[in-house]
Length: 255
Length: 283
Image 1: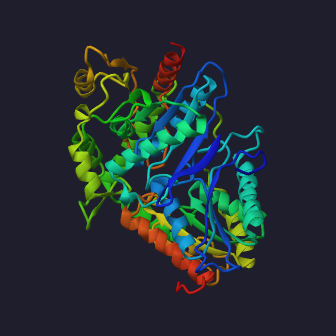
Image 2 (image 1 turned 120 degrees about the horizontal axis):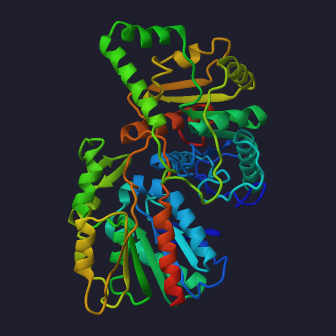
Protein backbone atom coordinates (compact mmCIF):
# COMPACT_ATOMS: atom_id res chain seq x y z
CA UNK A 1 0.00 0.00 0.00
CA UNK A 2 1.10 3.51 -0.70
CA UNK A 3 -0.35 6.34 1.41
CA UNK A 4 0.04 9.73 -0.23
CA UNK A 5 -1.53 13.13 -0.77
CA UNK A 6 -2.95 14.24 -4.08
CA UNK A 7 -5.20 17.00 -5.39
CA UNK A 8 -4.15 20.63 -5.20
CA UNK A 9 -2.20 22.66 -2.66
CA UNK A 10 -5.42 24.36 -1.63
CA UNK A 11 -7.26 21.04 -1.42
CA UNK A 12 -4.84 18.25 -0.46
CA UNK A 13 -6.56 14.86 -0.33
CA UNK A 14 -5.25 11.89 1.63
CA UNK A 15 -5.36 8.66 -0.35
CA UNK A 16 -4.03 5.14 -0.12
CA UNK A 17 -3.21 3.30 -3.32
CA UNK A 18 -3.26 -0.49 -3.06
CA UNK A 19 -1.68 -2.34 -5.99
CA UNK A 20 -2.97 -5.80 -6.94
CA UNK A 21 -1.76 -8.67 -4.77
CA UNK A 22 -3.18 -11.45 -6.87
CA UNK A 23 -3.82 -12.23 -10.51
CA UNK A 24 -7.00 -12.25 -12.50
CA UNK A 25 -8.12 -8.68 -12.10
CA UNK A 26 -7.12 -7.63 -15.57
CA UNK A 27 -6.80 -3.89 -15.73
CA UNK A 28 -9.53 -3.06 -13.29
CA UNK A 29 -9.17 -0.21 -10.87
CA UNK A 30 -11.66 0.68 -8.16
CA UNK A 31 -12.08 4.00 -6.40
CA UNK A 32 -13.77 3.57 -3.04
CA UNK A 33 -16.01 6.40 -1.89
CA UNK A 34 -16.52 6.60 1.86
CA UNK A 35 -19.65 7.80 3.59
CA UNK A 36 -19.17 10.89 5.75
CA UNK A 37 -18.84 11.80 9.41
CA UNK A 38 -20.07 9.21 11.90
CA UNK A 39 -20.76 6.74 9.09
CA UNK A 40 -17.21 7.22 7.79
CA UNK A 41 -15.83 6.29 11.19
CA UNK A 42 -17.92 3.15 11.37
CA UNK A 43 -17.07 2.14 7.80
CA UNK A 44 -13.32 2.73 7.80
CA UNK A 45 -12.44 -0.79 8.84
CA UNK A 46 -14.93 -2.33 6.41
CA UNK A 47 -13.26 -0.39 3.59
CA UNK A 48 -9.86 -1.74 4.65
CA UNK A 49 -11.28 -5.24 4.46
CA UNK A 50 -13.01 -4.59 1.14
CA UNK A 51 -9.73 -3.24 -0.20
CA UNK A 52 -7.83 -6.29 0.97
CA UNK A 53 -10.28 -8.65 -0.74
CA UNK A 54 -10.28 -6.65 -3.99
CA UNK A 55 -6.49 -6.52 -4.26
CA UNK A 56 -6.30 -10.27 -3.63
CA UNK A 57 -8.49 -10.65 -6.72
CA UNK A 58 -5.92 -8.68 -8.69
CA UNK A 59 -7.52 -5.23 -8.69
CA UNK A 60 -6.01 -1.78 -8.17
CA UNK A 61 -7.74 0.15 -5.38
CA UNK A 62 -7.69 3.77 -4.23
CA UNK A 63 -9.25 4.80 -0.95
CA UNK A 64 -9.29 8.50 -0.12
CA UNK A 65 -10.72 11.09 2.26
CA UNK A 66 -12.81 13.99 0.97
CA UNK A 67 -11.80 17.58 1.74
CA UNK A 68 -12.42 18.37 5.41
CA UNK A 69 -12.75 14.69 6.37
CA UNK A 70 -10.32 12.12 7.72
CA UNK A 71 -6.70 13.03 7.05
CA UNK A 72 -7.39 15.33 4.12
CA UNK A 73 -6.87 19.04 4.41
CA UNK A 74 -9.60 21.44 5.40
CA UNK A 75 -12.06 21.95 8.19
CA UNK A 76 -15.16 19.75 8.49
CA UNK A 77 -17.40 22.78 8.07
CA UNK A 78 -15.98 23.33 4.56
CA UNK A 79 -17.58 20.14 3.22
CA UNK A 80 -20.07 20.57 0.36
CA UNK A 81 -21.66 18.14 -2.08
CA UNK A 82 -20.11 19.98 -5.02
CA UNK A 83 -16.65 19.96 -3.50
CA UNK A 84 -16.79 16.31 -2.50
CA UNK A 85 -18.12 15.34 -5.93
CA UNK A 86 -15.13 17.09 -7.47
CA UNK A 87 -12.88 15.18 -5.05
CA UNK A 88 -14.25 11.89 -6.43
CA UNK A 89 -13.30 13.15 -9.89
CA UNK A 90 -9.77 13.93 -8.69
CA UNK A 91 -9.51 10.43 -7.23
CA UNK A 92 -10.62 8.87 -10.52
CA UNK A 93 -7.91 10.81 -12.35
CA UNK A 94 -5.35 9.89 -9.73
CA UNK A 95 -5.99 6.14 -9.87
CA UNK A 96 -5.96 6.14 -13.67
CA UNK A 97 -2.62 7.89 -13.68
CA UNK A 98 -1.08 5.89 -10.81
CA UNK A 99 -2.13 2.47 -12.14
CA UNK A 100 -1.92 3.30 -15.84
CA UNK A 101 -5.59 2.58 -16.48
CA UNK A 102 -7.96 4.06 -19.02
CA UNK A 103 -11.12 3.45 -16.97
CA UNK A 104 -12.03 2.71 -13.36
CA UNK A 105 -15.02 1.44 -11.39
CA UNK A 106 -16.54 3.25 -8.42
CA UNK A 107 -17.90 1.72 -5.23
CA UNK A 108 -19.66 4.15 -2.92
CA UNK A 109 -21.30 3.57 0.43
CA UNK A 110 -24.21 5.67 1.75
CA UNK A 111 -23.51 9.34 0.89
CA UNK A 112 -20.35 8.15 -0.85
CA UNK A 113 -22.63 6.30 -3.28
CA UNK A 114 -24.47 9.52 -4.07
CA UNK A 115 -21.19 11.38 -4.56
CA UNK A 116 -19.94 8.63 -6.87
CA UNK A 117 -23.16 8.83 -8.91
CA UNK A 118 -22.84 12.61 -9.20
CA UNK A 119 -19.18 12.33 -10.19
CA UNK A 120 -19.81 10.16 -13.26
CA UNK A 121 -21.87 12.84 -15.00
CA UNK A 122 -20.14 13.84 -18.19
CA UNK A 123 -17.33 11.29 -17.79
CA UNK A 124 -16.57 8.42 -20.11
CA UNK A 125 -13.76 6.88 -18.05
CA UNK A 126 -15.94 5.15 -15.45
CA UNK A 127 -16.87 1.61 -16.48
CA UNK A 128 -19.06 0.59 -13.57
CA UNK A 129 -20.94 2.28 -10.75
CA UNK A 130 -21.65 0.19 -7.66
CA UNK A 131 -23.87 1.76 -5.06
CA UNK A 132 -23.75 0.16 -1.61
CA UNK A 133 -26.70 0.98 0.66
CA UNK A 134 -26.94 4.41 -1.01
CA UNK A 135 -28.45 7.57 0.38
CA UNK A 136 -31.30 7.95 -2.12
CA UNK A 137 -33.06 10.93 -0.55
CA UNK A 138 -31.04 13.62 1.16
CA UNK A 139 -34.13 14.77 3.02
CA UNK A 140 -34.65 11.31 4.54
CA UNK A 141 -30.96 11.10 5.36
CA UNK A 142 -31.08 14.40 7.23
CA UNK A 143 -34.20 13.35 9.08
CA UNK A 144 -32.41 10.22 10.21
CA UNK A 145 -29.30 12.16 11.25
CA UNK A 146 -31.25 14.75 13.17
CA UNK A 147 -33.46 12.29 14.99
CA UNK A 148 -30.93 11.30 17.60
CA UNK A 149 -29.52 13.01 19.55
CA UNK A 150 -31.40 16.27 19.07
CA UNK A 151 -29.31 19.14 17.74
CA UNK A 152 -29.41 22.75 18.74
CA UNK A 153 -29.96 24.06 15.24
CA UNK A 154 -27.64 26.41 13.43
CA UNK A 155 -25.23 28.61 15.33
CA UNK A 156 -24.08 31.12 12.76
CA UNK A 157 -23.53 29.17 9.57
CA UNK A 158 -22.84 25.82 11.21
CA UNK A 159 -24.92 23.14 12.89
CA UNK A 160 -23.32 20.40 14.94
CA UNK A 161 -24.77 17.08 13.81
CA UNK A 162 -23.58 14.07 15.75
CA UNK A 163 -20.14 15.44 16.39
CA UNK A 164 -19.50 17.19 13.08
CA UNK A 165 -20.09 20.76 11.93
CA UNK A 166 -22.41 20.94 8.94
CA UNK A 167 -22.59 24.20 6.98
CA UNK A 168 -25.81 25.69 5.66
CA UNK A 169 -24.55 25.01 2.14
CA UNK A 170 -24.06 21.31 2.85
CA UNK A 171 -27.36 21.11 4.74
CA UNK A 172 -29.26 22.66 1.85
CA UNK A 173 -27.42 20.50 -0.66
CA UNK A 174 -28.38 17.38 1.24
CA UNK A 175 -31.97 18.52 1.60
CA UNK A 176 -32.30 18.82 -2.16
CA UNK A 177 -30.45 15.61 -3.01
CA UNK A 178 -32.59 13.13 -4.95
CA UNK A 179 -30.34 10.45 -6.35
CA UNK A 180 -32.87 9.26 -8.91
CA UNK A 181 -32.69 12.60 -10.73
CA UNK A 182 -28.91 12.54 -11.15
CA UNK A 183 -27.87 12.33 -14.83
CA UNK A 184 -26.05 9.01 -14.85
CA UNK A 185 -24.73 8.14 -18.35
CA UNK A 186 -27.23 5.90 -20.14
CA UNK A 187 -24.68 3.25 -21.08
CA UNK A 188 -23.01 2.98 -17.67
CA UNK A 189 -23.58 -0.36 -15.88
CA UNK A 190 -25.02 0.31 -12.44
CA UNK A 191 -25.25 -2.12 -9.53
CA UNK A 192 -27.34 -1.54 -6.44
CA UNK A 193 -26.24 -3.69 -3.51
CA UNK A 194 -28.51 -3.09 -0.57
CA UNK A 195 -29.11 -4.56 2.89
CA UNK A 196 -32.86 -5.00 2.48
CA UNK A 197 -35.92 -4.28 0.38
CA UNK A 198 -36.97 -0.65 0.61
CA UNK A 199 -39.14 1.49 -1.65
CA UNK A 200 -36.32 4.01 -1.98
CA UNK A 201 -33.98 1.39 -3.45
CA UNK A 202 -36.51 -0.08 -5.86
CA UNK A 203 -37.54 3.45 -6.84
CA UNK A 204 -33.94 4.27 -7.70
CA UNK A 205 -33.64 1.08 -9.71
CA UNK A 206 -36.76 1.96 -11.67
CA UNK A 207 -35.69 5.56 -12.19
CA UNK A 208 -32.36 4.57 -13.66
CA UNK A 209 -33.34 1.45 -15.59
CA UNK A 210 -33.70 1.76 -19.34
CA UNK A 211 -33.96 -0.77 -22.19
CA UNK A 212 -30.28 -0.29 -22.86
CA UNK A 213 -29.18 -0.34 -19.26
CA UNK A 214 -30.83 -2.67 -16.76
CA UNK A 215 -29.82 -1.75 -13.24
CA UNK A 216 -28.56 -4.79 -11.39
CA UNK A 217 -30.21 -5.10 -8.00
CA UNK A 218 -29.01 -7.39 -5.22
CA UNK A 219 -30.29 -7.65 -1.68
CA UNK A 220 -27.82 -9.02 0.83
CA UNK A 221 -29.76 -9.13 4.10
CA UNK A 222 -28.08 -7.18 6.85
CA UNK A 223 -29.02 -5.34 10.01
CA UNK A 224 -26.09 -3.01 9.60
CA UNK A 225 -27.02 0.52 10.57
CA UNK A 226 -24.23 2.84 9.57
CA UNK A 227 -25.66 5.84 11.31
CA UNK A 228 -26.26 4.20 14.64
CA UNK A 229 -24.38 6.05 17.33
CA UNK A 230 -21.82 4.21 19.36
CA UNK A 231 -20.14 6.05 22.16
CA UNK A 232 -17.10 3.82 22.01
CA UNK A 233 -16.57 3.97 18.25
CA UNK A 234 -17.27 0.37 17.26
CA UNK A 235 -16.56 -0.58 13.67
CA UNK A 236 -19.15 -2.25 11.47
CA UNK A 237 -18.22 -4.91 8.93
CA UNK A 238 -21.19 -6.53 7.17
CA UNK A 239 -19.31 -9.52 5.78
CA UNK A 240 -22.02 -10.67 3.40
CA UNK A 241 -22.28 -7.40 1.53
CA UNK A 242 -18.53 -6.87 1.44
CA UNK A 243 -18.10 -10.28 -0.18
CA UNK A 244 -20.96 -9.61 -2.61
CA UNK A 245 -19.28 -6.38 -3.73
CA UNK A 246 -15.98 -8.14 -4.31
CA UNK A 247 -17.63 -10.91 -6.32
CA UNK A 248 -19.51 -8.39 -8.40
CA UNK A 249 -16.45 -6.33 -9.36
CA UNK A 250 -14.23 -9.35 -9.92
CA UNK A 251 -16.90 -11.03 -12.07
CA UNK A 252 -17.06 -7.93 -14.25
CA UNK A 253 -13.32 -8.24 -14.79
CA UNK A 254 -13.62 -11.83 -15.99
CA UNK A 255 -16.50 -11.23 -18.35
CA UNK B 1 5.38 4.14 7.22
CA UNK B 2 7.54 3.09 10.16
CA UNK B 3 7.72 0.81 13.18
CA UNK B 4 9.21 -2.57 14.05
CA UNK B 5 7.81 -4.17 10.90
CA UNK B 6 7.61 -1.03 8.76
CA UNK B 7 3.86 -1.32 8.66
CA UNK B 8 2.70 1.52 10.90
CA UNK B 9 1.05 4.48 9.17
CA UNK B 10 1.03 7.97 10.60
CA UNK B 11 0.35 11.54 9.57
CA UNK B 12 2.90 14.13 10.58
CA UNK B 13 1.61 17.68 10.86
CA UNK B 14 4.47 20.15 10.53
CA UNK B 15 4.87 22.89 13.10
CA UNK B 16 4.16 26.41 11.98
CA UNK B 17 7.73 27.71 11.43
CA UNK B 18 6.75 31.14 12.74
CA UNK B 19 6.12 29.71 16.19
CA UNK B 20 8.34 26.63 16.23
CA UNK B 21 11.21 26.45 18.71
CA UNK B 22 13.96 23.87 18.80
CA UNK B 23 13.23 22.80 22.34
CA UNK B 24 9.49 22.32 21.99
CA UNK B 25 8.44 18.70 22.54
CA UNK B 26 6.77 16.84 19.71
CA UNK B 27 3.29 15.43 20.21
CA UNK B 28 2.18 11.84 19.57
CA UNK B 29 -1.49 10.82 19.48
CA UNK B 30 -2.51 7.28 20.45
CA UNK B 31 -5.55 5.40 19.13
CA UNK B 32 -8.71 5.26 21.15
CA UNK B 33 -9.85 1.63 20.87
CA UNK B 34 -9.96 0.70 17.19
CA UNK B 35 -10.91 4.22 16.09
CA UNK B 36 -8.25 5.14 13.54
CA UNK B 37 -5.85 8.02 13.94
CA UNK B 38 -8.24 10.85 13.04
CA UNK B 39 -9.94 10.26 16.40
CA UNK B 40 -13.63 10.09 17.22
CA UNK B 41 -15.39 13.07 15.66
CA UNK B 42 -12.02 13.91 14.03
CA UNK B 43 -10.94 15.33 17.37
CA UNK B 44 -7.29 14.22 17.07
CA UNK B 45 -6.98 16.02 13.72
CA UNK B 46 -8.32 19.22 15.22
CA UNK B 47 -6.06 19.09 18.27
CA UNK B 48 -3.03 18.21 16.16
CA UNK B 49 -3.57 21.07 13.74
CA UNK B 50 -4.11 23.61 16.52
CA UNK B 51 -0.95 22.47 18.33
CA UNK B 52 1.00 22.53 15.07
CA UNK B 53 -0.18 26.08 14.49
CA UNK B 54 1.35 26.93 17.88
CA UNK B 55 4.69 25.44 16.88
CA UNK B 56 4.42 21.79 17.96
CA UNK B 57 5.23 19.00 15.51
CA UNK B 58 2.55 16.33 15.84
CA UNK B 59 2.19 12.73 14.74
CA UNK B 60 -1.08 10.81 14.62
CA UNK B 61 -0.51 7.14 13.89
CA UNK B 62 -2.34 3.82 13.95
CA UNK B 63 -1.24 0.95 16.13
CA UNK B 64 -0.73 -2.34 14.32
CA UNK B 65 -4.04 -3.81 13.16
CA UNK B 66 -5.88 -0.48 13.44
CA UNK B 67 -6.73 1.98 10.66
CA UNK B 68 -4.20 1.81 7.84
CA UNK B 69 -1.46 0.01 9.78
CA UNK B 70 -0.74 -3.63 9.08
CA UNK B 71 -1.20 -6.32 11.72
CA UNK B 72 1.60 -7.57 13.93
CA UNK B 73 3.17 -10.92 13.25
CA UNK B 74 3.81 -11.69 16.91
CA UNK B 75 1.31 -12.24 19.70
CA UNK B 76 2.57 -9.72 22.21
CA UNK B 77 -0.21 -8.41 24.44
CA UNK B 78 -1.52 -4.96 23.51
CA UNK B 79 -0.16 -3.24 26.61
CA UNK B 80 3.33 -4.24 25.48
CA UNK B 81 3.02 -3.91 21.71
CA UNK B 82 1.31 -0.53 22.00
CA UNK B 83 4.14 0.87 24.10
CA UNK B 84 6.70 -0.50 21.66
CA UNK B 85 4.83 1.15 18.79
CA UNK B 86 4.44 4.46 20.64
CA UNK B 87 8.18 4.46 21.22
CA UNK B 88 8.72 3.68 17.55
CA UNK B 89 6.70 6.81 16.74
CA UNK B 90 8.95 8.79 19.07
CA UNK B 91 12.03 7.30 17.39
CA UNK B 92 10.66 8.37 14.03
CA UNK B 93 10.22 11.95 15.22
CA UNK B 94 13.67 11.92 16.76
CA UNK B 95 15.12 10.76 13.46
CA UNK B 96 13.24 12.96 11.01
CA UNK B 97 12.70 16.09 13.14
CA UNK B 98 15.37 15.83 15.83
CA UNK B 99 12.80 15.64 18.62
CA UNK B 100 14.19 14.80 22.04
CA UNK B 101 11.13 15.39 24.23
CA UNK B 102 7.57 14.23 23.74
CA UNK B 103 4.00 14.84 24.78
CA UNK B 104 1.76 11.79 24.46
CA UNK B 105 -2.00 11.85 24.51
CA UNK B 106 -5.22 10.15 23.71
CA UNK B 107 -8.71 9.17 24.69
CA UNK B 108 -9.58 6.07 26.72
CA UNK B 109 -7.12 3.31 25.72
CA UNK B 110 -5.01 6.04 24.13
CA UNK B 111 -4.74 7.64 27.57
CA UNK B 112 -3.70 4.27 29.01
CA UNK B 113 -0.97 3.73 26.41
CA UNK B 114 0.29 7.28 26.94
CA UNK B 115 0.66 6.54 30.66
CA UNK B 116 2.39 3.19 30.18
CA UNK B 117 4.78 4.63 27.62
CA UNK B 118 5.66 7.55 29.88
CA UNK B 119 6.62 5.07 32.59
CA UNK B 120 8.97 3.32 30.16
CA UNK B 121 10.50 6.31 28.41
CA UNK B 122 11.96 9.31 30.23
CA UNK B 123 11.75 11.46 27.06
CA UNK B 124 8.03 11.87 27.76
CA UNK B 125 7.52 15.25 29.47
CA UNK B 126 3.77 15.67 29.14
CA UNK B 127 0.57 13.63 29.03
CA UNK B 128 -2.88 14.74 27.95
CA UNK B 129 -5.45 12.12 28.79
CA UNK B 130 -9.16 12.05 28.02
CA UNK B 131 -11.04 9.73 30.38
CA UNK B 132 -7.96 8.08 31.89
CA UNK B 133 -7.82 5.61 34.80
CA UNK B 134 -9.83 7.19 37.61
CA UNK B 135 -10.76 5.99 41.08
CA UNK B 136 -13.56 6.51 43.54
CA UNK B 137 -13.06 8.39 46.77
CA UNK B 138 -15.13 8.33 50.00
CA UNK B 139 -16.79 11.61 48.95
CA UNK B 140 -17.70 10.10 45.57
CA UNK B 141 -19.25 7.05 47.25
CA UNK B 142 -21.40 9.28 49.45
CA UNK B 143 -22.53 11.50 46.58
CA UNK B 144 -23.18 8.58 44.23
CA UNK B 145 -24.86 6.06 46.49
CA UNK B 146 -26.60 8.11 49.16
CA UNK B 147 -29.29 9.56 46.87
CA UNK B 148 -29.90 6.10 45.43
CA UNK B 149 -30.26 4.49 48.86
CA UNK B 150 -33.20 6.73 49.63
CA UNK B 151 -34.81 6.61 46.18
CA UNK B 152 -37.21 3.69 45.45
CA UNK B 153 -37.16 4.60 41.73
CA UNK B 154 -33.39 4.25 41.61
CA UNK B 155 -33.58 0.82 43.23
CA UNK B 156 -36.12 -0.31 40.67
CA UNK B 157 -34.03 1.00 37.77
CA UNK B 158 -30.98 -0.75 39.16
CA UNK B 159 -32.76 -4.11 39.49
CA UNK B 160 -34.42 -3.77 36.09
CA UNK B 161 -31.22 -2.95 34.29
CA UNK B 162 -29.46 -5.90 35.89
CA UNK B 163 -32.29 -8.14 34.77
CA UNK B 164 -32.06 -6.91 31.21
CA UNK B 165 -28.34 -7.40 31.24
CA UNK B 166 -28.78 -11.02 32.32
CA UNK B 167 -31.35 -11.66 29.60
CA UNK B 168 -29.06 -10.19 27.00
CA UNK B 169 -26.24 -12.39 28.17
CA UNK B 170 -28.33 -15.53 27.87
CA UNK B 171 -29.93 -14.71 24.56
CA UNK B 172 -28.87 -17.25 21.95
CA UNK B 173 -27.59 -16.12 18.59
CA UNK B 174 -24.99 -16.67 15.93
CA UNK B 175 -21.88 -14.70 15.34
CA UNK B 176 -22.61 -10.99 15.23
CA UNK B 177 -22.57 -9.40 11.82
CA UNK B 178 -20.01 -6.96 13.08
CA UNK B 179 -17.49 -9.77 13.62
CA UNK B 180 -14.17 -8.79 12.08
CA UNK B 181 -12.66 -11.79 10.39
CA UNK B 182 -10.50 -9.81 7.98
CA UNK B 183 -7.33 -9.53 9.98
CA UNK B 184 -6.22 -9.34 13.55
CA UNK B 185 -7.08 -6.22 15.50
CA UNK B 186 -5.38 -5.81 18.85
CA UNK B 187 -7.35 -7.12 21.79
CA UNK B 188 -7.64 -4.93 24.83
CA UNK B 189 -10.14 -5.12 27.61
CA UNK B 190 -9.91 -2.01 29.68
CA UNK B 191 -9.53 -2.95 33.31
CA UNK B 192 -8.39 -0.26 35.70
CA UNK B 193 -5.22 -1.36 37.54
CA UNK B 194 -5.27 -1.20 41.35
CA UNK B 195 -5.34 2.43 42.42
CA UNK B 196 -2.12 2.02 44.40
CA UNK B 197 -0.26 0.89 41.27
CA UNK B 198 -1.40 3.91 39.27
CA UNK B 199 -0.63 6.22 42.19
CA UNK B 200 2.88 4.82 42.31
CA UNK B 201 3.28 5.30 38.56
CA UNK B 202 1.94 8.84 38.62
CA UNK B 203 4.23 9.69 41.54
CA UNK B 204 7.20 8.48 39.52
CA UNK B 205 6.16 10.63 36.57
CA UNK B 206 5.45 13.65 38.77
CA UNK B 207 8.89 13.38 40.36
CA UNK B 208 10.33 13.35 36.87
CA UNK B 209 8.57 16.65 36.16
CA UNK B 210 5.96 15.30 33.74
CA UNK B 211 3.02 17.68 33.24
CA UNK B 212 -0.53 16.31 33.09
CA UNK B 213 -3.72 17.48 31.42
CA UNK B 214 -6.73 15.35 32.31
CA UNK B 215 -10.19 15.68 30.77
CA UNK B 216 -12.98 13.70 32.44
CA UNK B 217 -16.33 13.34 30.68
CA UNK B 218 -19.74 12.49 32.06
CA UNK B 219 -19.32 8.93 30.83
CA UNK B 220 -17.12 8.36 33.87
CA UNK B 221 -20.03 9.20 36.18
CA UNK B 222 -19.80 5.85 37.91
CA UNK B 223 -16.29 6.79 39.02
CA UNK B 224 -16.09 10.57 39.26
CA UNK B 225 -18.59 13.06 40.60
CA UNK B 226 -16.69 16.22 41.52
CA UNK B 227 -14.04 18.45 40.01
CA UNK B 228 -11.01 17.77 42.17
CA UNK B 229 -11.72 14.07 42.70
CA UNK B 230 -8.91 13.02 40.34
CA UNK B 231 -6.23 14.75 42.41
CA UNK B 232 -7.82 13.70 45.70
CA UNK B 233 -7.93 10.06 44.62
CA UNK B 234 -4.12 10.11 44.51
CA UNK B 235 -3.23 11.88 47.79
CA UNK B 236 0.25 10.39 47.84
CA UNK B 237 1.15 12.01 44.48
CA UNK B 238 2.67 15.49 44.58
CA UNK B 239 1.51 16.91 41.26
CA UNK B 240 2.67 20.40 42.24
CA UNK B 241 1.50 22.86 39.61
CA UNK B 242 1.81 20.34 36.81
CA UNK B 243 -1.72 18.92 36.85
CA UNK B 244 -4.73 20.43 35.10
CA UNK B 245 -8.03 18.61 35.43
CA UNK B 246 -11.02 19.58 33.30
CA UNK B 247 -14.11 17.87 34.71
CA UNK B 248 -16.96 18.06 32.18
CA UNK B 249 -19.89 15.94 33.40
CA UNK B 250 -22.07 17.28 30.59
CA UNK B 251 -19.69 15.95 27.90
CA UNK B 252 -19.84 12.42 26.50
CA UNK B 253 -16.94 10.02 26.07
CA UNK B 254 -16.19 10.83 22.44
CA UNK B 255 -16.88 14.56 22.96
CA UNK B 256 -19.71 14.81 20.45
CA UNK B 257 -20.80 18.36 21.18
CA UNK B 258 -18.88 20.95 19.16
CA UNK B 259 -18.65 23.28 22.15
CA UNK B 260 -17.14 20.51 24.26
CA UNK B 261 -14.71 19.74 21.46
CA UNK B 262 -13.53 23.33 21.47
CA UNK B 263 -13.21 23.18 25.25
CA UNK B 264 -10.94 20.13 24.97
CA UNK B 265 -8.82 21.65 22.21
CA UNK B 266 -8.51 25.01 23.93
CA UNK B 267 -7.69 23.32 27.26
CA UNK B 268 -4.86 21.29 25.76
CA UNK B 269 -3.59 24.32 23.83
CA UNK B 270 -3.50 26.44 26.97
CA UNK B 271 -1.86 23.69 29.02
CA UNK B 272 0.80 23.06 26.39
CA UNK B 273 1.39 26.77 25.92
CA UNK B 274 1.88 27.25 29.64
CA UNK B 275 4.43 24.48 30.10
CA UNK B 276 6.20 24.80 26.74
CA UNK B 277 5.77 28.36 25.50
CA UNK B 278 5.97 28.76 21.75
CA UNK B 279 7.69 31.69 20.12
CA UNK B 280 5.47 34.74 19.84
CA UNK B 281 2.37 32.95 21.13
CA UNK B 282 0.67 33.60 24.45
CA UNK B 283 -0.66 30.56 26.35
